[in-house]
Structure formats: structure tokens, C-alpha cells
Image 1 (cartoon, helix red, strand yellow):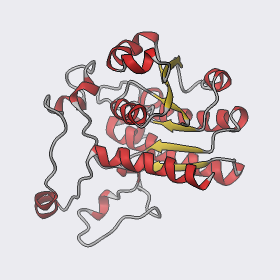
Image 2 (tube, one colour):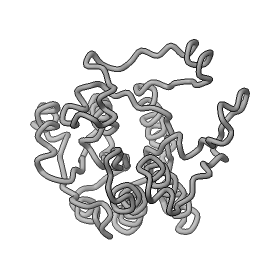
Image 3 (cartoon, helix red, strand yellow):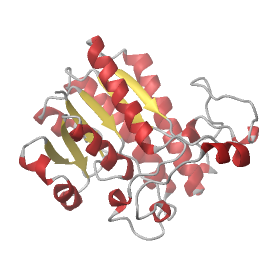
Image 4 (tube, one colour):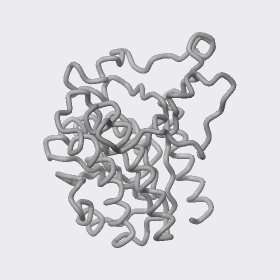
Length: 261
């Protein structure tokens, strides 16, 4: 089975991605910022750690040039799932906490893979629907967003002084930078971004998250059930559950695997 590099392995999205990959039989190396961040993962996925299908690498700062070089030199990978990106409402320095990590982290891993990992054939990046949505359009009844749509949020003083806009700008310009990279470098790997509107991972994934973070909204019993008939009627919003996002992620990896790309 393919070997996957999963960045930010202890995050909301990544823990569920990790479980899905291991259940499918993939070998995974997960990056974390400190060794202590692996404690929960080692306990939760102890059988995979013991049989060698799950390993960890410490990448203290993804904004540093060459941050992923060592892990890419140490292991051979077939694909990368890049989920590492911060989101919290208490950021004090928007530039260093909310903008630099997604943008520099994304361009950094693309550069390192391009330079050091010729066996990698595909990279999947978790982006956000905020990269696509245009708030001025409002609910936009009957409208459909496509991959041609981009958020009008700018990388300016406003976004640099507002946590939510800073988050959106960081994710938006990280995705744009990824596609600019592909256009300029024509790498030997494909890049796919997923832009889900909401994440509802199982509560276990948020075990170590402090009160006050978005994770407080997740139920202890598991994921929320979704009734799209009500959300469409009352809000004009269609929700896609987290498991569906995982299926989309793996589907893209496996489609390319079957095509030999």
C-alpha cells in the first residue's frame, strides 16, 4: 500500500484523516510541532504504532524554509495530505499566527517535495469553502459556486487585524500559491484542494483542545447528524458531513493510483 505524509497529524481534520488512512491499510508518517503532541496519537493508534504503519516526525515551525526537508529525506512517500494550518480566535499577531503558517507552510512543502521527493505523485491540501465564497453575494439563491470562484478577501491591513479574516486570507492565498506553483513549476505531482464549509470531527479528535476554541461546539457523542432539508430551507446551506470529505480525499488519492499517476 502507498506511504502517505500527513502534516499536522494531531489536528481536527488530520486525526480523522489519519484514522481513515490507517483503516484502509496505508502507511503514514505524521508531522507534529513537538514530540508531546504524539502522546494522544500514540495512545489512540497504538496498534498501528506497534506494527510500524504509523510513525511521527517533529516539524517545529512549518514557516521555516526547508521545514519538511528532513522527513522527506528520511522516508519514501507516494502522496502527501497537507492539513497543517492554525485556526483560533485568540490570535494576537495575525501575520505570524494566521497568515504565515498556511501560506509559507503550503509553498514550503510543495518546494520540498519538488526538490527531494520524486516518488510523490499527488498532494491533497485541505482548504476551506471560505476560499470560494463571496460574502457580498449573500445567500445567492439558485447560484452555484465552482472552482472558478474565489473569495474577494484581500491580503491587506483589514485581514491582518481580524482573526477570522486573517484565517480566510491565509487559507485563500495559500491555495492560490499552490496553483501558482503548479503553473510555474509543472511538477511531477498533481495538487488537489478540498474546500469544505464545515468540519465536524468526532469529539475524540479534539481531546486536548482548550475550552473556547471552535471545538467546544462538537458533541461528546460524536459527529452531528445533518438534515439538509432543514438547512437548505431555513439557511440556504447544504452541509457535507466530515466522513464524506474523507471519502473525497481518499477517492482522489486512489483514482490517481489506479491511473498510475
